[in-house]
Image 1 (cartoon, rainbow, N blue to C red):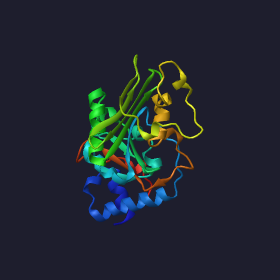
Image 2: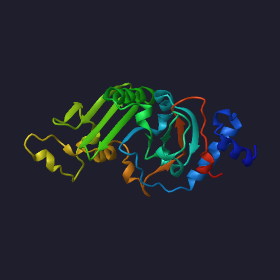
Image 3: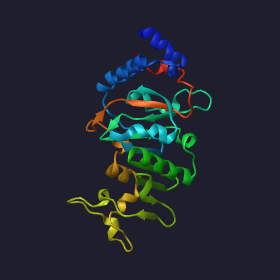
Image 4: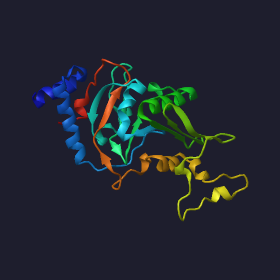
Length: 243
């Protein structure tokens, strides 16, 4: 297959028409470009999921994602600004970052914006990937929510509100490390390591803080763009993907 033909297929959005050889070429392109890429901070716009890099393949079925397209970190980072067709919105699955893959972009349309939908999604992801985490932070509204699920069930959850709610037993990541202090826990009614009430602190302890990704972050493989509906294809990606 020539690069010009591949470029034409990308421009037309006919990714679902590619044969196995052409798909391997696309993955090779993304791997080669990713190998020379430096990790940088990401902005999931307040809401994302995380799954282990070793078992991430199950996420596509868990979330009903289709027509995956291999991309670099840079190509997928601004996923919500990418062109889309009809109601088939793209979601970005990052390369492996310190052992985890992050999932973000158009999640309101993919998952929904209802509490039960959020929790159901993290449980489905954990059923397919062994473990899954969900993070939602809105500093303007004072919202901090995170959940950790294993094998289809939520094992630990925190939700901010008038009465902050902790569900499940504390995780090993919540334990204070040598030399650390938690001034909040010394307050009347405090609990150990209340800093985990902050999404930015919790995600850094539990998996990866997207806003703190940088030169010391271990990055492996390439990422994926995937759509919320089947048989649509990615149109106009030629403006994004430079062969």
